[in-house]
Amino acid sequence: MEPDAVPGLTLRGSYTRIDASEGENRVDELLFPQRRVTFENVQSETATESDIFSAEIDYEVNDAWTLTSVSGYIDTESDFLIDSTRDETGGTGAIDGSSFDEIFSQEIRATYQNDRLTGMLGAYFFDRDGGNVNTSESLIASEFAFPDPVTLASLIFQTPSPDPAQIGQATAIRGQIVTLVPEFPVLFDRSSDIEIENRAIF
Image (cartoon, rainbow, N blue to C red; front, side):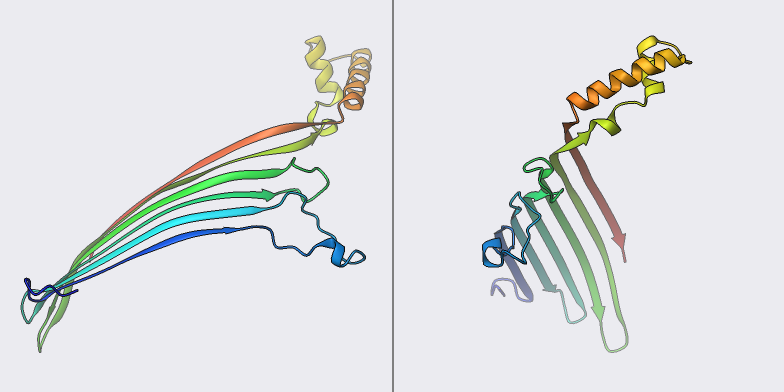
């Protein structure tokens, strides 16, 4: 756009809206029962929403000087569900999470040009704030989670050097626990933040 009220001024802008979702891409096993095996038993899903803005302003001060401003802004949110184990554990092992990203950038330039000389001065600023949060539940084998017999005996009998009889008792106790509870679910919560800021003069 070039408004008549301000000669030499040019305005450009754009806005893009993204609203996308995707499920799991797979072929039904019933189509190829002898050859097709699906290892994911939790249907994966992703969904993303983004708003993208951009603006550019050019102003010709005179025949030699031009001022330019370029701005950008992106706001994105995503949700996802994936099967991290791809085995028979069903819902256990699925990762359910979300992420967000907010980005702003600004550039200002002053350009000079004549028959003998061309030059540019400017400044740039970039700021990004984002992060993600996800949760998952995994099955942990008791055989690997519980302490070995010597360590367990040290904890039970409160001694740094358990004798053979104490170790034997700890071994029996450990065996009973592993037999009764061969595995147990553990819930994991993870989160991270992203903060980036850049400045430049040129």
